[in-house]
Image 1 (cartoon, each protein chain N blue to C red):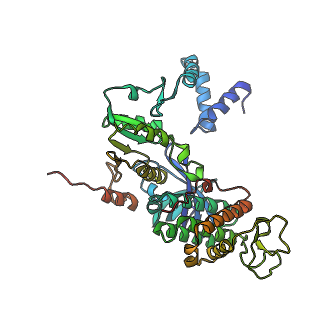
Image 2: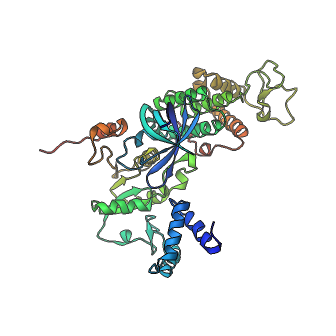
Image 3: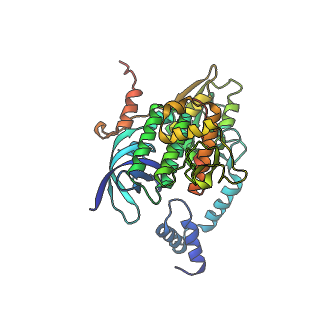
Length: 243
Length: 199
């Protein structure tokens, strides 16, 4: 029987038939996996709880004709319970897994997997505010996918910053000489915050003022939407209230 | 592929949830070949269900009148409301014969990834029902999965008001199962929700 085994984080699930689910996972070695988990919607299911979104599992799959089949699953990380206990964290985690799902359509490497697991773990532990964690995750995930934004040097000429004109289509901040007429200007604090989120400088990011955080979130959403070609549905429901 | 109306019947049946092409073909040929099968009655019921069935204006359950039979029943305990995701959950709870209160059907569970936020569910109607203080307990009976738990957490914070007890259905080990096969999440929940055994 052709089988394989991998560690994976559950991105989302869809109901299938009477009691089954199609589980979409981002795995460590096999990229994105879509597999059928049989009978997991029954209350007596042996591993239904392990195949909920945000769970990290060590799973064995049987290779099917169109979809693989989950044979066994052991949990490695259970972040769901802590995440759903806080609504802003729940909405942030949804946006993360939706982005991971979309970004892993064509290319899903180990870096994507480790980044997502780390972000979910951070959300579950409440290390940083959910909004900042989400923005940082999106910037880094897009960078891994090859769309790294520039928040210091000019994205076009490479001229050393700081610059304040931000053009999504050009890949970040640009020097005044190449900025299109009417290009939006960001507050210097916002640009610094965005650079911190991309680099993971949490001390600075946490200390940023609310205006900079709100402006940075808008920039991240616009940048994400541009590169994913359509927006993330979860972002519309993002709860930015402070928990 | 079959000709004309037979293929149309198979196609229409195949659009129903849980019915694949093979099942659709089997049902279509059962209808064609079984003389005793009353197609007129089936067609009439399908028409009636669309025309007559609506959602209860109070609880959101399916009903043939403006309000459902449960909301109209004066013998039900008006002080307790059980919140469920779907109308079919009402039927599941009614089968237990353990609950004699009223229901509130949310119409789903919070799922931002599917575009379902608080505004898409019947939260506002629930808060309005609690305004007159006649209700003393709300039982949250959303599904014991991630979306259901998120909905329960959201509701529990939304419904904080004096004199109102908000409870959640217990979850844990299924009756008739073996402990060794329980997953750690379910077993953990069972430990959290353990209760004193009466002597």
